Image (tube, rainbow, N blue to C red; front, side):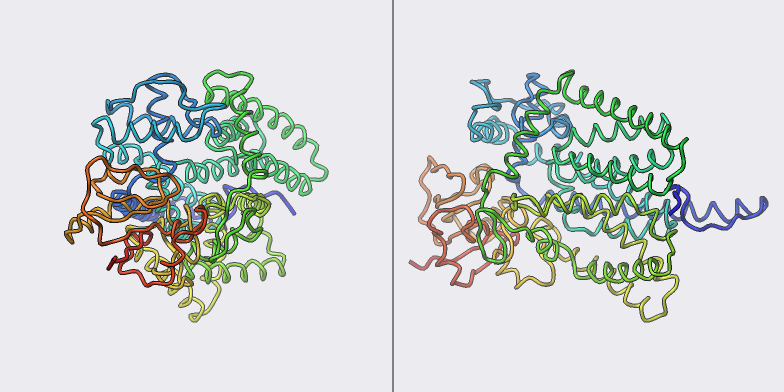
Length: 557
């Protein structure tokens, strides 16, 4: 196999000098205009959805910890995670001039109970006169930008290997991913990780193909940034080895390349290290980073966090958790397109048409390595951890489908159009509740909890809809079992606490005897609660399901 330049892999025809302006400018401007329009629509959709979502479980800690870091210089609220997303989400909140809780003892770090960080975050959001919905809005805006950057980057990569039409299709597929629409409106590190890994792998592959100090500096900087976002960036180590080995096999006698790539690899490692030193505020020994890595590996492979899938609970999870969750967290339209693309690649491989397959090498390696790590993980609490796999899959699907579109007949073309349209329509139909998206295979909204739980479905995002429903229907109070870290009273909800993962505070003011019960899907499934206290409610049809995650039951007695 010969090496292929990732920036010059789609077939082109060379126009003569006189015709170049007439043939090139409209295509570029048309591509840019279409991509810009898609980004505007997607951004508006994400913002609209996030305005209807209450603060999610872990999000408040990242936001409060980031704002506090700028205020005090102490970034130890989440020592198990690298701090780059704390910088990102904390900055707009800090610049807004909010009030901060008093500094009484350590907030995070070794030996400090995890509950302490949630107490601090709840105080910052709801106890000091800050507007919690404004804080959430400001913190989430950088996440929106990350989502749009991911869509644009996937489009640009696909355009570089298969042309502008394929690039636009890739952008549409990524933009219609429910998890991109959902986590583009959540101030946490999962979507930035997908963006950082995509950029780092693309840059690494480019440096391997054309080694030089410039490409090595870019790759090293992006690798360091990815490592500063989330500890799962350790996947870049095997990815880099595989890319190097792949290229070496394609150049068995290229001595000049081997010398150049060796020097480039050294430059990339040095730049990645220096980038991490900057991210960790001058820690040349990277003590904080290494400590976080140890915690992450222990949490992933040693701690037994209860997992939930298809109505079953497990202390150790299942190796097939993420493949099954993928079926339920992405649309059937995408699945059809993936099958069509896979068939296209199979035909190309059989005919030895490597020009179609070889340029996609970084996407193949990224998706394969990260999926392998997911299959080995015992931490099965959220499909969001698989997000770095999704954009590469969309890119490969777009390239395969685009090739099929150019060569297939009308029947297959109609299938492509119908599948793409259906994917967009079905996902859009879940607006604004993209976090709770489940595909066409689910049993119905009333049975959402029978499929998935925790952050794959219910991350505490439904309090705003519960509040509005109570106001609109004159409901003074509810019995409440809530899966989340936000205090429901902070959103104006009067309740009598029922058993929850985090104990709900008893309200100081007495409330009327509730005639309704509101139970979060994760608690209804019994994932984390002892004795499965709400099993009897699973035998009763709910009167209403709010935000696709909060189940309402009218209490007659």
